[in-house]
Image (cartoon, rainbow, N blue to C red; front, side, top):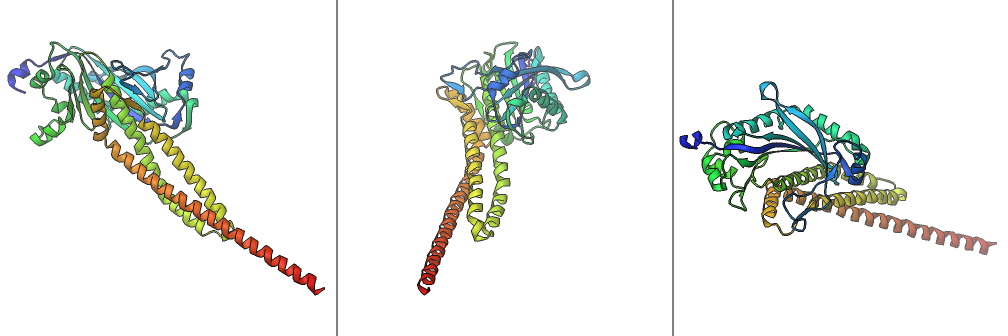
Length: 378
């Protein structure tokens, strides 16, 4: 940014800094029951929907439930900021906590500094106690709606810097000419190389001349003068999909070695009991495959994009940037291994039953022969 541009840096008249933290909290969540359990609360839950896009163009597969929590204070000392908090529950067992710090009448350099301050106060390197307290506050009133609750050990975080209005109208090109987005998106104080700068700004999108979205792995900048929250919602869904696929990828990583041990143990069983052991293990594996497949399908269908090309591009780019398709392929490969093992166990169980049946028939024939010989000898 030139010296003259620095003297006339834009002022953010309206915007927000949003810190997201997502957790896997259950196998699934009964969203209807969440609504019923919070109906009497001051901030009762509502179904989420995209604000600026027709439902036929983009819609949630199963609209999540949004619950408003009490405001919190972010930071400490003179740098404290008041923040709004919401919790969004997804039917596939995820919760997204959003801490939103409103911004007004703030110079661009101060806005960038505020983004870094929020990241330092409640970002990934900050004390986890802040988010755990929010998680407990959000989950406690609706815990009966959780099907097979889990200890939240898998998390995802994301930071959004949102500008809705500047002190003067600017196009996306005009904004980029006046400001440097790299410090805001990278969080780095030292200047980056040209190659690093190009890579950081590579995922840039505009639909109108006066909007702009720039995505990175852990942050995004959104310039949306119309005040829509659709891009932020789409990025949250992409992070929720990443969270759930990470959970199932780790679940299957733990399951495969245990499965091999159980198969070997079943094969070491005496032949008379092997068929039952094989059948029990096959049923267990079939149940696991069915459950994971059902939940991953829900995750895949969390957002349905049909007509909105702009949001579809942002959504697809976010998924690719977060490596969601690669994680999904890894989960599918591990499920295929378990399916093949289930098929092999089923075949072995059937073979063991056939062998026992054949042995029983032979024994019966021998008994009949012996009885016949005894009767003839009398």
